[in-house]
Length: 115
Image (cartoon, rainbow, N blue to C red):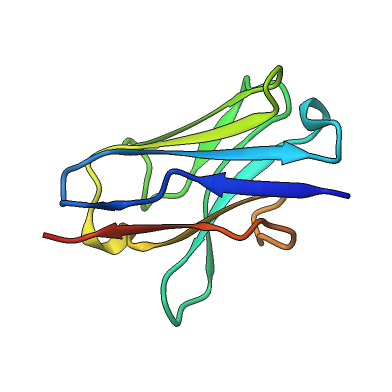
């Protein structure tokens, strides 16, 4: 049974940083490219970032490029998202997934950026 468990969300001030984690189990983690997606209250799923299975290639949405860094540890089976210079518009629930649509995802972790 595939499980994705996100953690690390918190309330931070604008300009702050957070590191999100996603632990995967029930599948061979190193075989899959992974994504982060987010959903603001009342909004649609928005793709944030993607990393290939080996961690050698990454992609970012224009909204987070140059502020967020995606990475993975295939030994630990864990996906990360380092979020820097956070803005109020980054407020959302963040999910890890296998595709940019967030078709299959965990329960999410909430990030609130507010002064």
